[in-house]
Image 1: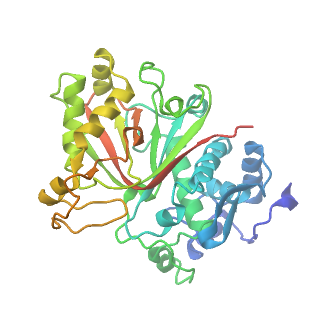
Image 2 (image 1 turned 60 degrees about the horizontal axis):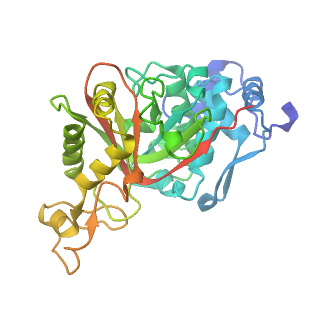
Length: 365
């Protein structure tokens, strides 16, 4: 299979030289990487059960085709283990879905980051973390899978920033990533792993979306950022939903078209929903209704609208604004809910929309 690897090879004398070459060529995210030797890349490709030239994602806006080999190279660099590659491939494949809006995510000035929810038995096989500090550092699979996606965006999709070119000593690759500020999640994404075992009545995300419980699935989205809401004083499911709707309704992210929202609900709040007999559908419905406003009300409150049109803050009320409504999502079904986190602390994380979302079944060998 070695001869079937098509990527260019560079001879160096040591791993240190290989690392410095990656920096000089602008192939890193600014952090050290694992040198992608032929042997390492081959082990990853073999672990995927696919051929190196299998197409994972097409990127028409840049006339690029992303292959298994290219993703494997970046997964090696990110510090993944070979068995993580099918998950990375699933995420990259979902990013190629037209509903996701890949080019906007790679090029926007808004600095959006890719997020993903992992469901199914693969969570346990890879020992992914769905409990305390689920969104933070410390778990190899969670962190390196997300980092592999970002490196794939840089190296296989050309989402190179100005900083990347400068760090490469003027390597001169065309700048595509035009983020004004960026965000920390652009290093390894929003890696969300759902706790499916402890809350069976709150059906996991992939089952809600029509997959089987034993399917391994990634749901991919893009977000401008996240915010944390403390909902400790609420004593019922309705009170929790009302508080979340109140906060989200004031977020400045109410929009007209194609909007979605992702909520990660920790055990303290999930316990209340289970106790009161709520389903995820009930939570979505309450939050959607609680965030619904007329366009006129949004303008009078001094907020702007997102999702296709960027109105100036506090724009004049126009004919039809009293009848047209907006919410945190296009419809209740577009409020994605995952249960995750440590046992203590009623902190809900909300990921605010930018772009679209897509789900894919992970192809495991």
